[in-house]
Structures are given as C-alpha cells and as structure tokens.
Amino acid sequence: MESVIALFAPVERPEQPGRSLVEQAREGSRAAFGQLYQQYSRMVHGLLLARVPHSEVEDMVQDVFLLALRRLQSLRDENAFGGWLAMIARNQAIDYHRRAPKTTELKDNMLQEKPPEPEALAVLDTIRSLPDAYRETLILRLVEGLTGPEIAVQTGLSPDSVRVNLHRGMKMLREKMEGRAAI
Image (cartoon, rainbow, N blue to C red; front, side, top):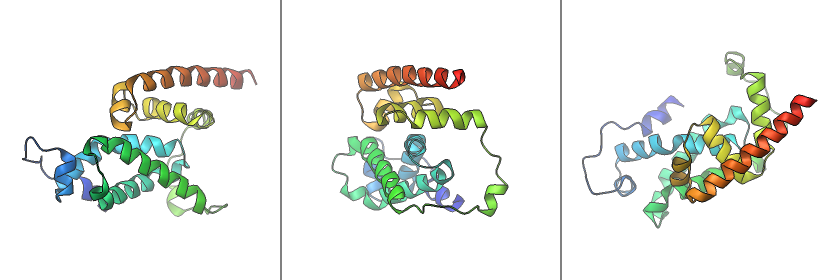
C-alpha cells in the first residue's frame, strides 16, 4: 500500500499557474494528481467508511484513486471532480458488497493492529444505521474532520444541503445514542 501512496505523493508543486490540477493531471502530471489525492483522500475515506467494513477502507481508498487516474480522461467537467470522485467511491462500495465473501478470514496483520475502541465502533455502527445522506456527511465531519464548506466543495453538494444533513443527522445520532444509553 505504501507504494500506491507514494505514486500519489506530490514530488513538487505544479509550476503551471492558471491551469487546474485536474487539467494538469490529465496531461500526466503525477504531482498534480498527488495534490488532488491530498485534497480529496479524506473525503473518499469518509464515504467508504460509511459503507464498507473498517478493515477494507484503506485499500479501497487507493483503489478509488487508481480507478480515477485511469478514468480521468472521461471526466467532462473538471469543476465536478469532487462529485465524480465521490461517485466512484460510492460505486466501489456497492461493488464491494456485491463481491464480498459472506465470511472473512483473520489476517496475520489484524493481530498486530490495535483494535478501535469499542465506544468508537458503537458510534460508527450507529452512524451507519442512519440514512445515506446523513451517514456520509456525519462521517466526513466527525471522523474525517472536514468542515461543512469543505464537504460541500468536495462532494458537490450545496452548502445548504450539507448544513441540513449535518443538523438532522446529529439530531438522529443523539436520539439513537441516548436510546442506546438507556438500554
């Protein structure tokens, strides 16, 4: 996985002012694509975390960016890059569930990793039980640390939609968590 991350790591800042990173990446600039990776990887991570098992997310983030790199020429509007990338991530999550085995084996590296805190897993499970729009925006905000405006820019949603989704999602999350605490 490290080698894939290195592929996207910007070696230098693109020296072509006035040209978008998407345009530069289309023309083969690894540095430009690396900057796009830096800008959007948290968003992709959050969208995948909302939909697939935690243990699969890191590898799938890399897969999404590799697919985006291969398909970059098909992007019609470079200003829609964030929404286009979000759709690739969502589609990869759907594909994961189509082909995922019903059982999984324990991997050697799983024994070496520190498991997430049980409380964090409980909150994540509760967020995953919310409707898609709330689930995605809450994970992008609470787990990935993106602000409302950053979520809007990166996903292509309107700032008002993000604000409403965050407000309603937090309300639903609080209600579900309070219900859990009462049990």
